[in-house]
Length: 201
Image 1: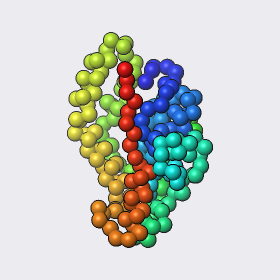
Image 2: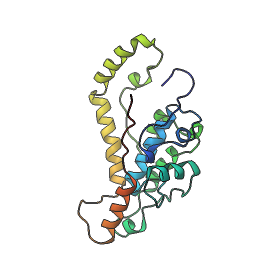
Image 3: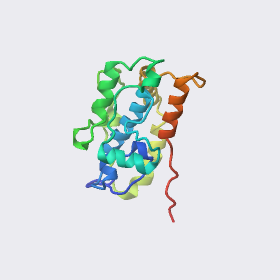
């Protein structure tokens, strides 16, 4: 990510791409908040937020750009027959993150302070240190530092707790189910596909 300005270009997997990325107006780190929000939506509701009938990358991108069909903010009927809806605070947390206008999305720090998580965080000194205010020649050193930080037990423990809270609020769908629930799980898998990354020559 550049120190100033915005990035352009499309990368990633269609269901997690932000509107600003797909419309090529330029994006910054707020696109990552959108991607995390899409992941949160899938955990909570068992389907992608923008889930057109045609399960192709092009159709999903078009749905995100046009905001249609809109997220239903509920578990699909066939899953809801077997599992209750997520807690209201969990849904509020997802809505808080999934803002189409990047200027309206919270920062990562603000998101972590949402009442749904209610986590007592450890020291935030490292998290508050500027990561991009450094010459380009120091990027290799920064990458090496990141390798060490990502194994930090405090960071890992906090991340595990966030994921555990989301998993507890989301649909606990077993690998083997009967009837309609199996069909709906397959529907979700068809929508939440992966794309091969572009070949760089």
